[in-house]
Image 1 (cartoon, rainbow, N blue to C red):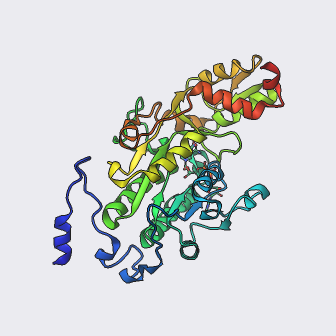
Image 2 (tube, rainbow, N blue to C red):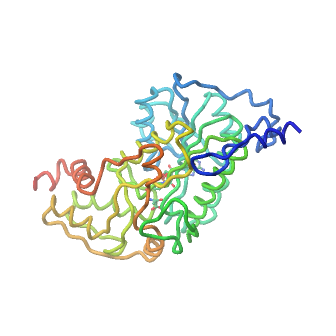
Image 3 (tube, rainbow, N blue to C red):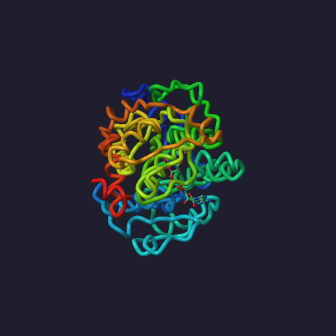
Length: 369
Ligand SMILES: NC(=O)c1ccc[n+]([C@@H]2O[C@H](COP(=O)([O-])OP(=O)(O)OC[C@H]3O[C@@H](n4cnc5c(N)ncnc54)[C@H](O)[C@@H]3O)[C@@H](O)[C@H]2O)c1
Ligand SMILES: C[C@@H](O)[C@H](N)C(=O)O
């Protein structure tokens, strides 16, 4: 009876007309892993004045080290733990706490969360779009089974959980220009399918167990000092390296392939901002975020302004091209802008200047400027 009365008391959110978080795990009697409700004594509570204790999974990829740097500046070095299944390079190992964590090992995850009194979890482990197509069973395990472990450990220990999604969560039947937050999502890659699954499972855990799940759909992310991990948008990172070093670049997508992109600083700031946003400002739990959209041809034109002899040629990779042709060309992120004040800093000209300054200080870019 108590349970039914509490369900009745839960109202509809005026902002979105959707259900507000239903009930905390303890009212449901059992958590997702069948842990007795009163066994939830490990969860560390923190008030707004305390710093969160952060764990980043898959932290040695393109985005994780930059995220750790940003969060350590904000919350203190020792409050942010980077983890992965790979061996960290020296500079990462010495820059702050690093531990081994395999997201397929649930007990290992739970031990890390408990021993380190983790309160916020950024879940970055994944196999990206192109590499996922080359190894579907591993992508399925890491991106789906691994996500289940993350959701369960987060729900059991009352963590605030960030899981990134992607433009790859849409497919050929989605509106592509622009792509809104809510529309048909029928991706044709294992990566995209696993990310739609993550969005839906995270939202389900939010409504069912009160999990504080937050998710942004990132565009292709462009970074200077970290390498992409096997995606369809990787060309937009490699082009800067090759332009600065060799003055030429062979592109694996067609010249007119338009995709949403974002500079890494904007991406990481968006991630921190949505995690810090007051819960009542979030009318949704999964948001598109956007900065710019361009084609390889347009990117090459901008590079030419800095590297006058730059040449681009095309040798199209059929798998990547098919993926790109099914993805959004432009993202509609008006809900993120409206709800929690998202605003990007980098458009195409600033992106190109920043990337070439990084790569080109001692090469042909420096000579041209
Ligand atoms: N980089 C982008 O352009 C982009 C765009 C959209 C979304 N995202 C998402 O952001 C997140 C981070 O992306 P990224 O580019 O840094 O990815 P990445 O491929 O560069 O890194 C992923 C990391 O996951 C780790 N990993 C693999 N299996 C693991 C396991 N079993 N346990 C723990 N770690 C494991 C890998 O070792 C790797 O370091 C991913 O979830 C990705 O889907 C990235
Ligand atoms: C877009 C994103 O999810 C990733 N960079 C990929 O291309 O797979």
